[in-house]
Image (cartoon, rainbow, N blue to C red; front, side, top):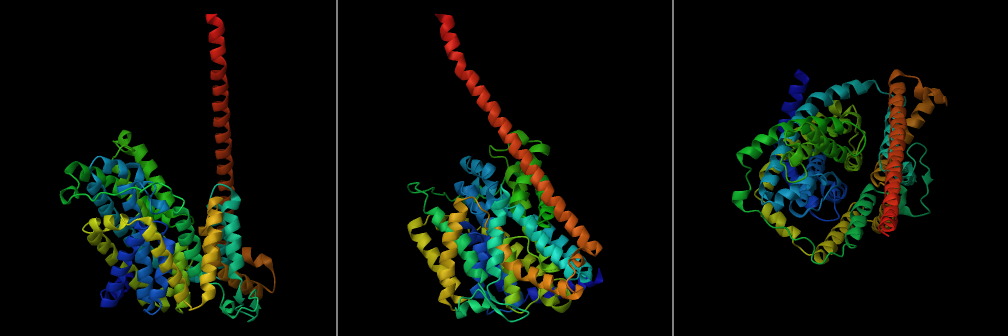
Length: 524
């Protein structure tokens, strides 16, 4: 406990410096704006700020990315409440009761409940991160190539399986990401692979153009398909409507607590924790809330619990990143990429070798969490004004920012070509219902998987049994196998249920279709 307190003091010493305070402010502000804009999400937002943070100190750069991650969660839900248009996949549940509250004239109350709930959930989650991350980091010091290979490859397989309905929906993008990660100079032998005599490819394919392409450009191409004339026009809530009444405050406390704990637990698991936690929190409220019958019609519980879970999940997912160096989401994969590029080695040694970064990021997120609460409610009118900008002006501006961001990281036109190609490929794969998150994670984890594989083969002199020779590696592979088999069984059960319901519906329609002739014959 004393080491944790010493770390917190070190973190506060760094977090309260002007540089980290400014980094937290910029990240919170940009994250909220990115969450509001159509076609951008936390992944593209984190990738877009990468060119801006490379000149910063590593701690400040990571704080900006982490604050952007937290800010997009709030911004995406704002459009759900005001316009019934989720800016993030994790903000879908916010439309269930948030937009009905807006139609009742309670948009301001919904936004306040959302902001306060996100602050409370983020604070609870960060306290748990403070307590658990150092413990996990110390435990991970016993890990070797076999354990890390099991974690990286096993986690990648589980993430790919959780990517969508069919196994291939996550597996194919994952394979593409792994293939792209092999481009460039091989770390151990120094050989060049798949560069096709293009000098710029000798350092590999950057994550920024790929992430901005498959998430940003592809989303903008999808947004252009929207033929709704004029689109939805949000209305700014009046100042006196910004505060919930006493009954709404009273009904929010329990959902905030339940959503915070549930979201934090989901954040520790591989997969789309933000999305899964919001749906799970909503289902819990449907089961335990005293006002469960009002959910879906503008109940405050329907916005309080999912938004708390969403923010807690984003904070909880920092534990495997800071302690193990393994990202469980595409946004955190961008953070890992930034750490490696800046010469900071993620993993269990981060807390010992660079405690200023480890604790500085944690404490700065406390500060960013406060800033999100203070910033967002007074700026509701500003966000609404931005949402009123016509798409014909907004989308070209976002494309220009994306291209500049993709080019400025390495100053290479090859990255611009990669960005545009990734946008087209991402658009096609999205139309075919593939999950793009596994592509980004495959691109980031590919080199780590290869590194641990080759280290293990070197230590064991080519014996593959080495990778299942320790209790930790056996446990990890068992959990991976259990997750894959359990996911396959659940998917099969879901398919059989849908087929049964379709058959019952078809049988009912055939019976109803045969009734009129009988009735006519009887009348005759």
